[in-house]
Amino acid sequence: MIQDFKDLVVWQKAVVLVKEIYKLTKTFPPEEQFGLTSQIRRAAISVSSNIAEGHSRKGREFPHFLSIARGSLAEVESQLLIAVELNYISSTDAIKLRDLASEIYRMMGALSKKLTPRPSPLTP
Image (cartoon, rainbow, N blue to C red; front, side, top):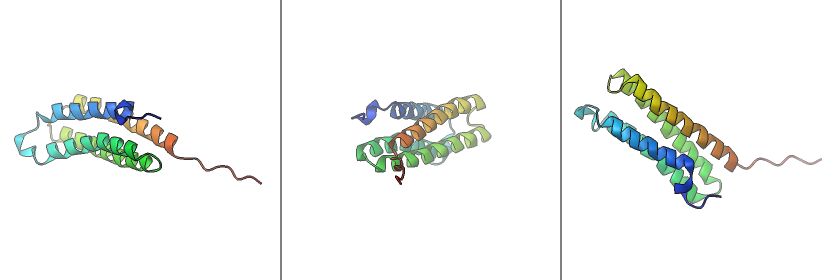
């Protein structure tokens, strides 16, 4: 098992997502500073934060934190679509980030599955 959450590739990719979201939202209108800009940044940060916190808890709690992170990732994807609809970002930029988000989502699902104990088969 990986000892430090920073060594998890999924956490590293989540941090890349945060950095890309911050770059992208710098172009949002000033009136969105406390609206969509703040919301999408917080949701993106929540992904990497929940991966880190879950890793520190170990055991059965880690999959729970991954589930929370996946929910935050869905928020990011929804907010990217809204940003496109409001013409704050291009579809191309949104697709690039949604592709990264989808990759992170799949990685968290695979990690959660690996961490969740399987019930042992009943013996007759």
